[in-house]
Amino acid sequence: MGLHEAQRRAVDHAASWLGSVAERPVGVPVDAESLRARLGTLPDEGVDPAIVIDELATALEPGLVATPGPRYFGFVTGGTLPAALAAEWLVTAFDQNAASYVMSPASAVAEEVAGSWLLELLGLPAGAAVGFVTGAQMANVSCLAAARHAVLARRGWDVEAAGLASAPVPAVLIGEKAHSTLLQSLRLLGLGAGTARRVPADGQGRMRPDALRAAMASTDGPVLVCAQAGEVDTGAVDPLDAIADLVEERPGSWLHVDGAFGLWVAASPTRRALLAGRARADSWAIDAHKWLNVAYDCGMAIVHDPEASRAALATTAPYLALGARDPSASTPESSRRARAVPVYAALRSLGRHGVGELVDRCCDLATQAAAELAASPRVEVLNEVVLNQVLFRAPGVDTAALLDRVRRDGTCWVGGTTWHDSAAVRFSVSNWSTTAADITRSTTAIIAATAQLTAG
Ligand SMILES: *Cc1c(COP(=O)(O)O)cnc(C)c1O
Image 1 (cartoon, rainbow, N blue to C red):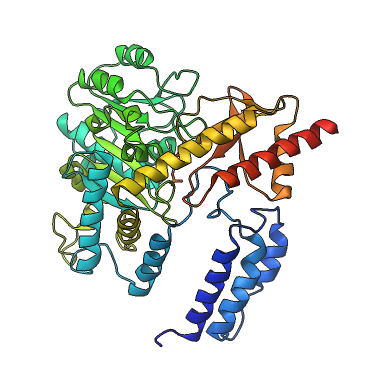
Image 2 (cartoon, rainbow, N blue to C red; image 1 turned 90 degrees about the horizontal axis):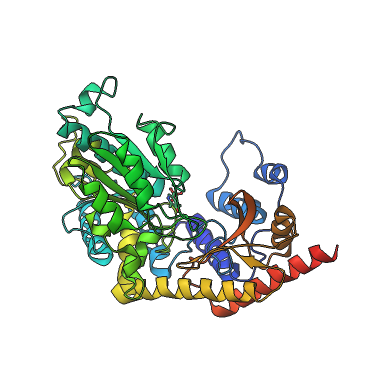
Protein backbone atom coordinates (compact mmCIF):
# COMPACT_ATOMS: atom_id res chain seq x y z
CA MET A 1 0.00 0.00 0.00
CA GLY A 2 1.18 3.52 -0.75
CA LEU A 3 4.06 2.60 -3.02
CA HIS A 4 3.85 3.17 -6.77
CA GLU A 5 4.69 0.09 -8.84
CA ALA A 6 7.94 1.81 -9.94
CA GLN A 7 8.91 2.27 -6.30
CA ARG A 8 8.12 -1.34 -5.47
CA ARG A 9 10.39 -2.44 -8.31
CA ALA A 10 13.12 -0.10 -7.07
CA VAL A 11 12.94 -1.77 -3.65
CA ASP A 12 13.30 -5.18 -5.35
CA HIS A 13 16.30 -4.01 -7.38
CA ALA A 14 17.85 -2.49 -4.26
CA ALA A 15 17.33 -5.78 -2.42
CA SER A 16 19.01 -7.79 -5.15
CA TRP A 17 21.94 -5.36 -5.23
CA LEU A 18 22.33 -5.51 -1.46
CA GLY A 19 22.07 -9.29 -1.57
CA SER A 20 24.82 -9.57 -4.19
CA VAL A 21 27.20 -6.83 -3.09
CA ALA A 22 29.33 -9.03 -0.83
CA GLU A 23 29.97 -11.75 -3.41
CA ARG A 24 29.86 -10.18 -6.87
CA PRO A 25 33.19 -9.41 -8.60
CA VAL A 26 34.09 -6.15 -6.86
CA GLY A 27 34.81 -3.93 -9.86
CA VAL A 28 35.80 -5.57 -13.09
CA PRO A 29 36.78 -3.22 -15.95
CA VAL A 30 33.92 -2.20 -18.26
CA ASP A 31 33.93 0.08 -21.30
CA ALA A 32 31.98 3.33 -21.22
CA GLU A 33 30.71 2.97 -24.79
CA SER A 34 28.75 -0.19 -24.00
CA LEU A 35 27.25 1.49 -20.90
CA ARG A 36 26.20 4.48 -23.00
CA ALA A 37 24.56 2.16 -25.53
CA ARG A 38 22.62 0.40 -22.77
CA LEU A 39 21.17 3.72 -21.61
CA GLY A 40 19.84 4.53 -25.09
CA THR A 41 18.60 7.84 -26.49
CA LEU A 42 16.03 10.40 -25.31
CA PRO A 43 12.60 8.99 -26.20
CA ASP A 44 9.99 11.16 -27.91
CA GLU A 45 7.22 9.79 -25.76
CA GLY A 46 7.36 8.94 -22.06
CA VAL A 47 7.87 5.39 -20.84
CA ASP A 48 5.92 3.70 -18.06
CA PRO A 49 7.70 4.44 -14.73
CA ALA A 50 7.92 0.78 -13.69
CA ILE A 51 9.55 -0.10 -17.01
CA VAL A 52 11.91 2.88 -16.68
CA ILE A 53 13.08 1.51 -13.33
CA ASP A 54 13.47 -2.09 -14.52
CA GLU A 55 15.41 -1.08 -17.62
CA LEU A 56 17.49 1.46 -15.74
CA ALA A 57 18.58 -1.09 -13.13
CA THR A 58 19.45 -3.59 -15.87
CA ALA A 59 21.32 -1.01 -17.95
CA LEU A 60 23.45 0.23 -15.05
CA GLU A 61 24.24 -3.21 -13.60
CA PRO A 62 27.51 -4.00 -15.46
CA GLY A 63 28.97 -0.60 -14.56
CA LEU A 64 28.25 -0.85 -10.84
CA VAL A 65 31.23 -1.22 -8.52
CA ALA A 66 30.76 -3.00 -5.19
CA THR A 67 32.11 0.01 -3.28
CA PRO A 68 29.66 -0.62 -0.39
CA GLY A 69 30.81 -4.25 -0.22
CA PRO A 70 33.28 -5.75 2.27
CA ARG A 71 36.29 -6.14 -0.06
CA TYR A 72 36.44 -2.71 -1.66
CA PHE A 73 39.65 -1.11 -0.34
CA GLY A 74 40.04 1.73 -2.85
CA PHE A 75 40.38 5.40 -1.89
CA VAL A 76 38.79 5.75 1.58
CA THR A 77 35.34 4.32 1.00
CA GLY A 78 32.66 3.41 3.50
CA GLY A 79 29.57 1.33 2.86
CA THR A 80 26.14 2.10 4.23
CA LEU A 81 24.95 0.93 7.64
CA PRO A 82 21.46 -0.62 7.54
CA ALA A 83 19.93 2.19 9.61
CA ALA A 84 21.68 4.86 7.54
CA LEU A 85 20.41 3.41 4.26
CA ALA A 86 16.86 3.10 5.56
CA ALA A 87 16.99 6.69 6.85
CA GLU A 88 18.27 7.80 3.44
CA TRP A 89 15.16 6.32 1.83
CA LEU A 90 13.00 8.28 4.26
CA VAL A 91 14.88 11.48 3.45
CA THR A 92 14.02 11.06 -0.22
CA ALA A 93 10.41 10.08 0.44
CA PHE A 94 9.88 12.96 2.90
CA ASP A 95 11.54 15.32 0.37
CA GLN A 96 12.17 18.07 2.89
CA ASN A 97 14.18 21.19 2.16
CA ALA A 98 16.76 21.43 4.94
CA ALA A 99 17.69 25.03 4.12
CA SER A 100 15.64 26.59 6.89
CA TYR A 101 13.63 25.89 9.99
CA VAL A 102 10.43 27.25 8.50
CA MET A 103 10.65 24.94 5.48
CA SER A 104 11.21 21.86 7.59
CA PRO A 105 11.34 22.05 11.38
CA ALA A 106 12.03 18.29 11.43
CA SER A 107 15.15 18.60 9.27
CA ALA A 108 16.45 21.66 11.11
CA VAL A 109 16.08 20.02 14.52
CA ALA A 110 17.57 16.72 13.26
CA GLU A 111 20.64 18.71 12.16
CA GLU A 112 20.85 20.37 15.55
CA VAL A 113 20.64 17.06 17.42
CA ALA A 114 22.95 15.06 15.11
CA GLY A 115 25.39 17.97 15.16
CA SER A 116 25.52 18.12 18.93
CA TRP A 117 25.94 14.33 19.20
CA LEU A 118 28.80 14.58 16.75
CA LEU A 119 30.59 17.26 18.75
CA GLU A 120 30.19 15.19 21.91
CA LEU A 121 31.46 12.01 20.22
CA LEU A 122 34.48 13.72 18.66
CA GLY A 123 35.41 15.71 21.77
CA LEU A 124 34.96 19.07 20.04
CA PRO A 125 33.62 22.23 21.68
CA ALA A 126 29.86 22.16 22.36
CA GLY A 127 28.13 25.03 20.59
CA ALA A 128 30.31 24.89 17.48
CA ALA A 129 28.46 25.33 14.17
CA VAL A 130 27.93 22.05 12.29
CA GLY A 131 27.08 22.44 8.61
CA PHE A 132 25.93 19.34 6.71
CA VAL A 133 27.50 19.48 3.26
CA THR A 134 28.26 17.08 0.39
CA GLY A 135 31.58 15.89 1.78
CA ALA A 136 34.99 16.93 3.06
CA GLN A 137 35.63 18.98 -0.08
CA MET A 138 32.77 21.36 0.72
CA ALA A 139 33.53 21.07 4.42
CA ASN A 140 37.04 22.36 3.72
CA VAL A 141 35.61 25.19 1.60
CA SER A 142 33.07 26.12 4.29
CA CYS A 143 35.60 26.04 7.14
CA LEU A 144 38.18 28.04 5.19
CA ALA A 145 35.50 30.60 4.23
CA ALA A 146 34.86 31.07 7.96
CA ALA A 147 38.63 31.30 8.53
CA ARG A 148 39.02 33.88 5.78
CA HIS A 149 36.21 35.92 7.29
CA ALA A 150 37.51 35.79 10.85
CA VAL A 151 41.20 36.42 10.21
CA LEU A 152 40.44 39.40 7.96
CA ALA A 153 37.69 40.81 10.21
CA ARG A 154 40.16 40.89 13.11
CA ARG A 155 42.38 43.01 10.85
CA GLY A 156 39.49 45.38 10.13
CA TRP A 157 38.71 43.99 6.67
CA ASP A 158 35.19 42.98 5.61
CA VAL A 159 35.98 40.35 2.98
CA GLU A 160 32.32 39.51 2.33
CA ALA A 161 31.67 43.09 1.23
CA ALA A 162 35.06 44.22 -0.08
CA GLY A 163 36.46 41.04 -1.61
CA LEU A 164 40.12 40.17 -1.61
CA ALA A 165 41.68 42.87 -3.81
CA SER A 166 44.07 44.80 -1.49
CA ALA A 167 42.91 42.76 1.53
CA PRO A 168 45.56 42.02 4.22
CA VAL A 169 45.49 38.31 3.34
CA PRO A 170 47.23 36.16 5.96
CA ALA A 171 50.00 33.72 5.08
CA VAL A 172 48.52 30.28 4.46
CA LEU A 173 50.55 27.30 5.66
CA ILE A 174 49.58 23.76 4.72
CA GLY A 175 51.28 20.39 4.96
CA GLU A 176 53.36 18.94 2.15
CA LYS A 177 50.85 16.06 2.15
CA ALA A 178 47.68 18.19 2.31
CA HIS A 179 44.73 16.63 0.48
CA SER A 180 43.98 17.83 -3.06
CA THR A 181 40.57 19.13 -1.95
CA LEU A 182 42.27 21.52 0.46
CA LEU A 183 44.16 23.05 -2.47
CA GLN A 184 40.90 23.21 -4.40
CA SER A 185 39.33 25.06 -1.45
CA LEU A 186 42.13 27.64 -1.43
CA ARG A 187 41.62 28.11 -5.18
CA LEU A 188 37.86 28.61 -4.86
CA LEU A 189 38.26 31.11 -2.03
CA GLY A 190 40.81 33.23 -3.88
CA LEU A 191 43.48 32.41 -1.30
CA GLY A 192 45.69 30.82 -3.94
CA ALA A 193 46.76 27.20 -3.97
CA GLY A 194 50.14 28.17 -5.39
CA THR A 195 50.97 30.86 -2.83
CA ALA A 196 50.23 28.62 0.18
CA ARG A 197 53.46 27.62 1.90
CA ARG A 198 54.00 23.86 1.95
CA VAL A 199 55.33 22.68 5.29
CA PRO A 200 57.62 19.63 4.96
CA ALA A 201 56.38 16.32 6.31
CA ASP A 202 58.14 13.43 8.00
CA GLY A 203 58.52 9.99 6.39
CA GLN A 204 54.92 9.06 7.25
CA GLY A 205 53.43 12.26 5.84
CA ARG A 206 52.92 14.13 9.14
CA MET A 207 53.53 17.90 9.20
CA ARG A 208 56.79 18.57 11.07
CA PRO A 209 56.33 21.15 13.86
CA ASP A 210 59.98 22.31 13.54
CA ALA A 211 59.34 22.93 9.83
CA LEU A 212 56.11 24.81 10.65
CA ARG A 213 58.05 26.98 13.10
CA ALA A 214 60.65 27.71 10.42
CA ALA A 215 57.98 28.51 7.81
CA MET A 216 56.14 30.81 10.24
CA ALA A 217 59.39 32.65 11.01
CA SER A 218 59.37 34.08 7.49
CA THR A 219 55.83 35.48 7.90
CA ASP A 220 54.36 38.39 9.85
CA GLY A 221 51.06 38.66 11.66
CA PRO A 222 48.25 36.15 11.83
CA VAL A 223 48.51 32.91 9.86
CA LEU A 224 46.02 30.40 8.52
CA VAL A 225 47.36 26.90 9.19
CA CYS A 226 45.74 23.76 7.78
CA ALA A 227 46.65 20.53 9.54
CA GLN A 228 45.46 17.04 8.69
CA ALA A 229 44.14 14.09 10.68
CA GLY A 230 44.47 11.04 8.41
CA GLU A 231 46.84 11.25 5.44
CA VAL A 232 45.17 9.44 2.52
CA ASP A 233 48.05 7.06 1.82
CA THR A 234 49.41 6.29 5.29
CA GLY A 235 46.64 7.37 7.71
CA ALA A 236 49.22 9.48 9.56
CA VAL A 237 47.88 12.22 11.86
CA ASP A 238 49.66 15.58 12.16
CA PRO A 239 50.88 16.41 15.71
CA LEU A 240 47.91 18.66 16.47
CA ASP A 241 48.96 19.76 19.97
CA ALA A 242 52.40 20.93 18.85
CA ILE A 243 50.86 22.68 15.82
CA ALA A 244 48.24 24.39 18.04
CA ASP A 245 51.06 25.65 20.32
CA LEU A 246 52.73 27.38 17.38
CA VAL A 247 49.51 28.85 15.97
CA GLU A 248 48.65 30.21 19.42
CA GLU A 249 51.85 32.26 19.42
CA ARG A 250 50.33 34.38 16.63
CA PRO A 251 47.21 36.15 17.90
CA GLY A 252 44.40 36.43 15.37
CA SER A 253 45.44 33.21 13.58
CA TRP A 254 43.26 30.25 12.61
CA LEU A 255 43.93 26.52 12.76
CA HIS A 256 41.89 24.24 10.50
CA VAL A 257 42.00 20.43 10.64
CA ASP A 258 41.11 18.35 7.58
CA GLY A 259 40.00 15.18 9.34
CA ALA A 260 37.87 13.67 6.57
CA PHE A 261 38.32 10.16 7.92
CA GLY A 262 40.98 10.45 10.66
CA LEU A 263 38.85 12.60 12.96
CA TRP A 264 36.57 9.61 13.62
CA VAL A 265 39.42 8.11 15.63
CA ALA A 266 38.31 10.49 18.39
CA ALA A 267 35.51 7.96 19.03
CA SER A 268 38.02 5.22 19.89
CA PRO A 269 39.14 5.22 23.54
CA THR A 270 42.29 3.23 22.67
CA ARG A 271 43.43 5.34 19.71
CA ARG A 272 42.13 8.85 20.38
CA ALA A 273 45.44 9.95 21.94
CA LEU A 274 46.68 10.29 18.34
CA LEU A 275 44.34 13.27 18.06
CA ALA A 276 45.39 15.04 21.26
CA GLY A 277 44.97 18.79 20.87
CA ARG A 278 42.20 18.53 18.26
CA ALA A 279 39.78 20.65 20.30
CA ARG A 280 42.24 23.58 20.17
CA ALA A 281 41.62 24.10 16.44
CA ASP A 282 39.13 26.64 15.05
CA SER A 283 37.53 24.42 12.42
CA TRP A 284 37.33 20.79 11.32
CA ALA A 285 36.23 18.99 8.14
CA ILE A 286 34.91 15.43 8.40
CA ASP A 287 33.11 12.99 6.13
CA ALA A 288 30.14 10.83 7.11
CA HIS A 289 30.21 8.87 3.84
CA LYS A 290 33.65 7.49 4.63
CA TRP A 291 34.16 5.96 8.06
CA LEU A 292 30.71 6.53 9.56
CA ASN A 293 29.30 4.41 6.71
CA VAL A 294 26.50 6.74 5.63
CA ALA A 295 25.57 6.81 1.90
CA TYR A 296 26.93 9.51 -0.42
CA ASP A 297 26.93 12.38 -0.13
CA CYS A 298 27.51 13.63 3.37
CA GLY A 299 30.19 15.51 5.25
CA MET A 300 30.29 18.09 8.04
CA ALA A 301 31.92 21.51 8.32
CA ILE A 302 32.49 22.27 11.99
CA VAL A 303 33.41 25.80 13.07
CA HIS A 304 34.13 26.63 16.71
CA ASP A 305 32.80 30.19 16.42
CA PRO A 306 29.29 30.00 14.90
CA GLU A 307 29.43 33.74 14.21
CA ALA A 308 32.37 33.28 11.82
CA SER A 309 30.49 30.52 10.03
CA ARG A 310 27.31 32.60 9.79
CA ALA A 311 29.14 35.73 8.61
CA ALA A 312 30.91 33.80 5.86
CA LEU A 313 28.13 31.48 4.70
CA ALA A 314 24.60 32.63 5.55
CA THR A 315 22.38 33.54 2.60
CA THR A 316 20.04 36.43 3.29
CA ALA A 317 17.01 37.72 1.44
CA PRO A 318 13.85 39.36 2.80
CA TYR A 319 11.60 36.48 1.74
CA LEU A 320 13.81 33.85 3.38
CA ALA A 321 13.42 35.30 6.89
CA LEU A 322 16.29 33.15 8.16
CA GLY A 323 17.03 32.96 11.84
CA ALA A 324 20.51 32.76 13.29
CA ARG A 325 20.15 29.03 13.92
CA ASP A 326 18.87 28.12 10.49
CA PRO A 327 20.84 25.27 8.92
CA SER A 328 21.79 27.26 5.83
CA ALA A 329 23.71 29.67 8.06
CA SER A 330 26.51 27.10 8.27
CA THR A 331 26.73 25.84 4.68
CA PRO A 332 27.35 27.58 1.34
CA GLU A 333 24.26 25.89 -0.08
CA SER A 334 20.67 27.02 -0.09
CA SER A 335 18.16 24.24 -0.87
CA ARG A 336 19.44 20.80 0.00
CA ARG A 337 18.43 17.38 1.31
CA ALA A 338 18.18 16.55 5.02
CA ARG A 339 21.63 14.97 5.26
CA ALA A 340 21.63 14.92 9.04
CA VAL A 341 18.86 12.32 9.17
CA PRO A 342 21.04 9.36 8.07
CA VAL A 343 23.85 10.65 10.29
CA TYR A 344 21.45 10.62 13.22
CA ALA A 345 20.34 7.07 12.32
CA ALA A 346 23.96 5.86 12.00
CA LEU A 347 24.98 7.37 15.33
CA ARG A 348 21.90 6.05 17.11
CA SER A 349 22.20 2.54 15.69
CA LEU A 350 25.89 2.29 16.65
CA GLY A 351 25.86 4.28 19.86
CA ARG A 352 28.96 5.94 21.27
CA HIS A 353 30.68 2.58 21.83
CA GLY A 354 29.68 1.22 18.44
CA VAL A 355 31.38 4.08 16.56
CA GLY A 356 34.57 3.45 18.54
CA GLU A 357 34.31 -0.29 17.85
CA LEU A 358 33.81 0.32 14.12
CA VAL A 359 36.93 2.48 14.02
CA ASP A 360 38.99 0.00 16.06
CA ARG A 361 37.81 -2.97 14.02
CA CYS A 362 38.85 -1.32 10.74
CA CYS A 363 42.25 -0.37 12.22
CA ASP A 364 42.77 -3.93 13.50
CA LEU A 365 41.81 -5.35 10.08
CA ALA A 366 44.30 -3.01 8.40
CA THR A 367 47.00 -4.29 10.78
CA GLN A 368 46.01 -7.85 9.85
CA ALA A 369 46.20 -7.01 6.13
CA ALA A 370 49.65 -5.47 6.56
CA ALA A 371 50.90 -8.55 8.44
CA GLU A 372 49.53 -10.95 5.82
CA LEU A 373 51.00 -8.91 2.95
CA ALA A 374 54.36 -8.48 4.70
CA ALA A 375 54.55 -12.24 5.27
CA SER A 376 54.99 -12.63 1.50
CA PRO A 377 58.57 -12.15 0.30
CA ARG A 378 57.08 -10.45 -2.80
CA VAL A 379 55.47 -7.57 -0.92
CA GLU A 380 56.92 -4.63 0.96
CA VAL A 381 54.69 -2.66 3.36
CA LEU A 382 55.70 1.01 3.24
CA ASN A 383 53.91 2.67 6.15
CA GLU A 384 53.49 2.36 9.90
CA VAL A 385 49.90 1.15 10.10
CA VAL A 386 48.49 3.56 12.69
CA LEU A 387 44.90 3.69 11.39
CA ASN A 388 43.00 1.97 8.58
CA GLN A 389 45.45 2.59 5.71
CA VAL A 390 48.06 0.15 4.38
CA LEU A 391 50.54 1.25 1.73
CA PHE A 392 52.61 -1.34 -0.09
CA ARG A 393 54.43 -2.27 -3.26
CA ALA A 394 55.66 -5.44 -4.88
CA PRO A 395 59.33 -4.81 -5.72
CA GLY A 396 60.14 -5.78 -9.28
CA VAL A 397 56.46 -5.87 -10.29
CA ASP A 398 54.88 -3.09 -12.35
CA THR A 399 52.26 -1.50 -10.07
CA ALA A 400 49.81 -0.67 -12.87
CA ALA A 401 49.93 -4.29 -14.05
CA LEU A 402 49.38 -5.48 -10.48
CA LEU A 403 46.33 -3.21 -10.02
CA ASP A 404 44.89 -4.43 -13.31
CA ARG A 405 45.47 -8.10 -12.44
CA VAL A 406 43.83 -7.70 -9.02
CA ARG A 407 40.82 -5.89 -10.49
CA ARG A 408 40.28 -8.47 -13.23
CA ASP A 409 40.36 -11.21 -10.60
CA GLY A 410 37.51 -9.36 -8.85
CA THR A 411 38.08 -10.64 -5.30
CA CYS A 412 38.88 -7.15 -4.09
CA TRP A 413 39.64 -3.65 -5.34
CA VAL A 414 42.72 -1.64 -4.37
CA GLY A 415 43.93 1.74 -5.61
CA GLY A 416 47.23 3.17 -6.76
CA THR A 417 49.24 6.18 -5.65
CA THR A 418 52.71 7.65 -5.80
CA TRP A 419 54.64 7.57 -2.54
CA HIS A 420 58.13 9.05 -2.21
CA ASP A 421 58.33 9.28 -6.01
CA SER A 422 57.45 5.71 -6.84
CA ALA A 423 54.27 3.83 -7.55
CA ALA A 424 52.54 2.09 -4.64
CA VAL A 425 49.25 0.42 -3.75
CA ARG A 426 46.77 1.74 -1.17
CA PHE A 427 44.59 -0.59 0.87
CA SER A 428 42.01 1.25 2.97
CA VAL A 429 39.66 -0.54 5.40
CA SER A 430 36.61 1.63 6.06
CA ASN A 431 33.58 -0.61 5.66
CA TRP A 432 31.34 -1.70 8.54
CA SER A 433 30.83 -5.19 7.05
CA THR A 434 34.44 -6.21 6.36
CA THR A 435 35.55 -9.31 8.31
CA ALA A 436 38.91 -10.94 9.06
CA ALA A 437 38.04 -13.58 6.43
CA ASP A 438 37.51 -10.84 3.80
CA ILE A 439 40.99 -9.50 4.57
CA THR A 440 42.62 -12.92 4.17
CA ARG A 441 40.75 -13.63 0.92
CA SER A 442 41.91 -10.28 -0.42
CA THR A 443 45.56 -10.44 0.63
CA THR A 444 45.71 -14.00 -0.77
CA ALA A 445 44.39 -12.72 -4.12
CA ILE A 446 46.88 -9.84 -4.13
CA ILE A 447 49.83 -12.09 -3.32
CA ALA A 448 48.71 -14.57 -5.99
CA ALA A 449 48.60 -11.72 -8.54
CA THR A 450 52.16 -10.68 -7.68
CA ALA A 451 53.26 -14.32 -8.07
CA GLN A 452 51.61 -14.56 -11.52
CA LEU A 453 53.28 -11.35 -12.66
CA THR A 454 56.67 -12.45 -11.34
CA ALA A 455 56.31 -15.78 -13.13
CA GLY A 456 55.98 -13.90 -16.37
C1 LIG B 1 38.45 12.08 1.22
C2 LIG B 1 39.19 13.25 1.74
C3 LIG B 1 38.80 14.56 1.41
C4 LIG B 1 37.71 14.86 0.40
O1 LIG B 1 36.53 14.30 0.76
P1 LIG B 1 35.27 14.17 -0.23
O2 LIG B 1 34.37 13.36 0.60
O3 LIG B 1 35.75 13.47 -1.46
O4 LIG B 1 34.77 15.54 -0.51
C5 LIG B 1 39.48 15.61 2.00
N1 LIG B 1 40.48 15.38 2.85
C6 LIG B 1 40.91 14.14 3.18
C7 LIG B 1 42.04 13.98 4.13
C8 LIG B 1 40.26 13.03 2.64
O5 LIG B 1 40.66 11.80 2.98
